[in-house]
Amino acid sequence: MFWDRKTETLKGKALTALQEKRLKTTVAQALKVPFYKKQFAAAGIRPSDIRTIADIGKIPFTKKQDLREGYPFGFLAVPLKEVVRIHTTSGTTGKPTVVGYTRKDLSAWADLIARNMYMAGVREGDVFQNMVNYGMFTGGLGFHYGAELLGVTTVPSATGNTKRQIDMIRDFGVTVIHCTPSYAMHLSEVAEELKLSLPTLRIGLFGAEPWSEAMRKALEERLGVTAFDSYGMSELFGPGVAFECPEHDGLHIWHDSYLVEIIDPKTGEQLSDGERGEMVVTPLVKEAMPVLRYRTGDVTMKMEDGCLCGRGQKIARITGRSDDMLVIRGINVFPSQIEHVLLNVPEVGNQFMVYVDRVNHLDEMTVEAEINRGYFSGELSDLARIQKKVVKELRDALEIRTTVKLVEPGTLPRFEGKAKRVIDRRSDAL
Ligand code: DLL
Image: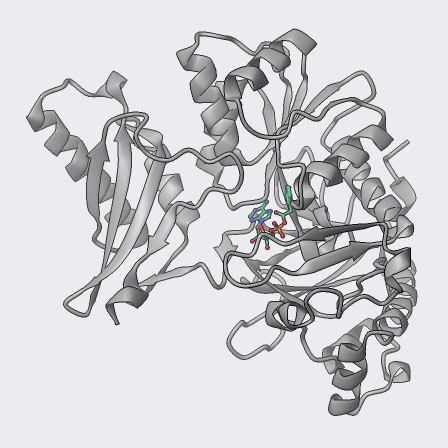
């Protein structure tokens, strides 16, 4: 039974007591790592200074760069022989971050995934196809063991060969899929092209990258699923950190396993509920690689308690990363906002790319979008009309002027894993 009602609906003093107990254990575990020993000494704090949740503010932040500098095993709090698996983060530059797991970690992680899937309505009897990378990326094995623990029939299809993925969904009667939202869109396009329906699907678990409400609507319509947002990051186990419940109004971040703070990324000051900022997380149940006050770089806010499902702490859908947020002529733009606008213009398809350049010291943003043949007459004048429309919609929503280039359907890159839709070329121009 993976509706852990008691833990998931814990409130008030009982919840604080559990969190404080686990925080103390986590701090003690972290202090086995030389980095944290030094960090505590430099800040003049002792483990006994961390008694309440509020005391967490005394601990300095841990940054991605700190973990990178510990490559490969500098952040392990247990001997390597107790580590039964490692994953690495999908860093884009330099060395990745290595994440280690003990047996206990793997069991706690699988349990969280099973709870997420159960919350989304997945049950024994479902057939689950896991269409993400099964290698160093945490999405594959992470979901795999959670699904098996829950007791669903698991299809470890991994990524690639979309036609084969579609065949498996149809042949095995798959009811639940997991992949990135961008791959789900690609899958629906290929199914449509091949005129193959997917009538058995009912639930889509989508995550690992930011996506919008418009994308949810499009995926639900095209795939015939109810879509759930799934958030996680390797440094915090992987997927399974926060997940939507059937209310689809924010993601429950498991309050028994993660402490959440929202800070102003510039000053490091804690923000109040309802204020958007960078999420800082302290996992409470990690053994091999505990991290304290980890700066996720992800932008969200804490939501008010009181979800209709009865579960606790929620965060809003992640709008992007504080460090991939684009600043175009002083205006902050998240790629997910661009996606939202484009998905509401029927004349363009679901695929796009964004290029940012500096021309004569000014930022210029170019959006390439695929034309949707169904809404295009083929006339040059119609092309100009659509282009003008997209420029206007983007200007209205983002308050910036963009250049829009319309391209033939099927010509922009498709992504099996996380989409890389933004290419910022400004640093080349400095
Ligand atoms: O992406 C873990 C994962 C796998 C999550 C499968 C969900 C499903 P990393 O590769 O370490 O881990 O990347 C973590 O991806 O800091 C966010 O910036 C982004 N991200 C993950 N989920 C979401 C989401 C996995 N639902 C980084 N919405 C995070 C927005 C997300 N961004």
